[in-house]
Image (cartoon, rainbow, N blue to C red; front, side):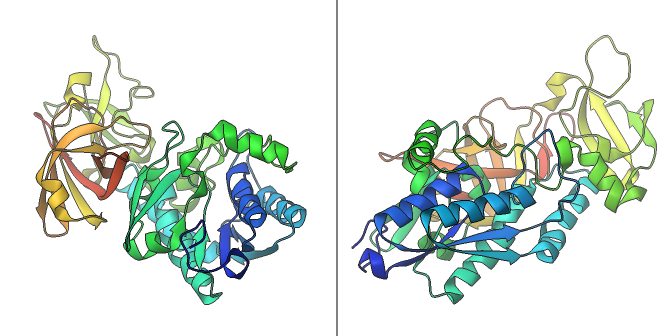
Amino acid sequence: MNSLGIKKPKKETKVVVAMSGGVDSSVVAALMKQEGFDVTGITLKLYDDTKQSKEGRQCCAGQDILDAKRVSEKININHEILYYQKKFKTEVIDSFIDSYASGETPIPCVQCNQTVKFRDLFKYAKDLKADALITGHYVSRVQNNSHASMYRAKDYSRDQSYFLFSTTQEQLDYLRFPLGEIDKSETRNIAKKLDLNVAEKPDSQDICFVPNGDYSSVIKKFRPESFKKGKIINLSGKQIGEHEGIINYTIGQRKGIKISSEKPLYVVNIDASNNIVIVGNKENLEIKKIKLRDLNILENRKEFEKIINIKVRSTGRLLKAKINFLGNFAEVEILEKETGISPGQACVFYSEDKIGDKVLGGGWIDKTFNNYLST
């Protein structure tokens, strides 16, 4: 049994490393090569980047492909580029636009992992007869007999388990995450020691197809009809203003409402079917219950008979909650105070054991409920 848990000598173990051109995946590729595995690096070309942002770093852009190729040459591994622009446009960008236009707050990075990365790249790696698909995600994978489980990374500040909740069991059995047990600072130190050209490269910050974080510009490009004026109303149903398009608003938003009030106003609901934005005070944002759709469960449902932890945003804290399954839906009763939860985001389930915080699965937030209204 080698270090990847595969019953083969390392030199006979073929692995595919997903190389984004960043420091994390580059270090992973170098470590696999250093250990003696048969390594092929694969970089995905996901979108046309002729007008790449100058202010932020984004993944899967032209410079990143060049960086991945340089690293591959430096460590002497095979490198391939897969051109997935059409897949990415259909499955990620179009889905993102549809979700925003319907008043949700989508997470395209999860959909990217769910589709072109872990589904399509997974299939390609299998076609290459690779024994494992390796990525630079900060998440831990623990093998217990024949069952693989996912855990939050050792470095909580870098943990990416929230973005990987939709990983299937078949994919998890095949995937490996070498960075799950180390800190980001250690990753950069490894890159420096190996003299990789990406050692000091900044982390990607923006969604790759959203220049400078300007979501509305993407919607305007692909769906200009979404910029339709409509009412801004309060919780009593009274119109108190006018908006320039619901895609300019997200639940929990305070800035940009442009309505004077004694107490700060927040977006508490978006009624896409009627093109209405509903505003209220901060206390109106507290959510007691959420309904989830499109569940992905990785562990035995007996784990849900007790109170578990959930995350409702990537940078959020763990919250105590109770889960009630309704077919492929679930109702989540949140047992701690939390505000500003939006449909379109993910809710990820965790249980704590002696190893750490195990990912039980998750689902997409379909509706939220509080004392005032539901969305």
